[in-house]
Image 1 (cartoon, rainbow over the protein chains, first blue to last red):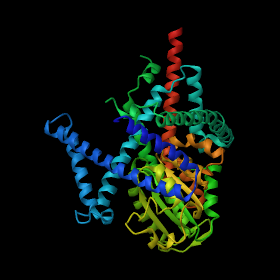
Image 2: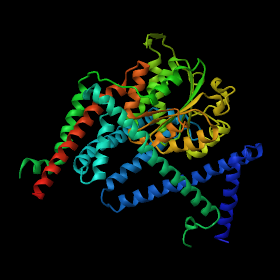
Image 3: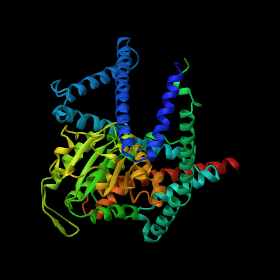
Image 4: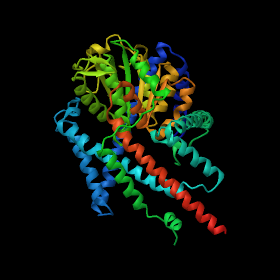
Length: 214
Length: 288
């Protein structure tokens, strides 16, 4: 029963969702709306689980003074502070007032945005260093990759002159629209078929890893 | 150790230092650079430009602060263009930190629209864009695929209220607006895989005109959809945003950023060439 019930539920709802997608009838849409609410409800449980897990792991790190425990303290502070301001200093739990809270907006604009933007900006430096070290013409394929990358990077460079610019642009467009397109289409079709196969295996109960080992 | 061996074993901190200097100098010293507009950006601009006053477009701000440098300029240039044309905009955000991005962009663009401007020889009087009349921000809901399909049936299904907690029916902009059938196009500005959901579950099922604003590294992945006609235009990275700014005659963050990006790319190319020269010479010497 422990395994049969989830398998039956997956089969029933999986098959229904397939048919629902192709049947734009009022009844099917009403049931879909109902199921959509269920997805959010299940998602809220997952959110609660995630928050609990974050608190437990961070608190454990702080208590046992594990390596870099200070970061865990900052994480917990961020979680509590944003929740506190998000609920408008704890005054409005059931309205969206907190989203316009001065501190909530300022924490996001002046802490969250610069932190994430900085992390991403650092990539430019690592890409430059990695390109310098790894982008070598070691073989024919590596050379092709190198030349293609240089052409695409240089295609809009205004300093290469109008003659080269025209050829660079044409070659770059060809690279993007012919070899790139062919490879991407192959990958997309392959992935699409893979998704269908996996989904069918799950719906039909052939793939059962999601049930766990017990 | 000869010069080529030294090139091969150059400390990466020199690469960091040179790149940092180039980025700072090109950012601080303004100078114009030529921007060439491509067809995929031009088609997005033309689509928005040919819409009539009062038409509604749907803009999905599906990016987080980490891709802000590339994506924000797209949002700013497209939405400002739309507001100047007196189009109405429905915003949503299907990325976790997206609501903050959208909220910030709406505030900034609202301020910008208050000022009189002349673009491409056309004078636009400054005005205030009003929430609920000129635009509406639906906010964020998890599970993008479900939200996109839900909105295809009725915007009120996943979003009974807007981001600020007001019921959608209380907003004049939503009068008679049920789903994608009432919007002229969807423009997804995305730094996440949510863009696949828009193509598969949105455009694939509801067949609305879809344009994409993508980070530079993502753009090449979506050319198949451009060629198949599923997507009518793509803005690829900062360059795409700069091209849109050029077409809109509204130079902003992207045009500024392109100076830095152009020279940073040139430094990277120079290092790649240098590294390969060192590699090839060293290999030849070893063979001899």
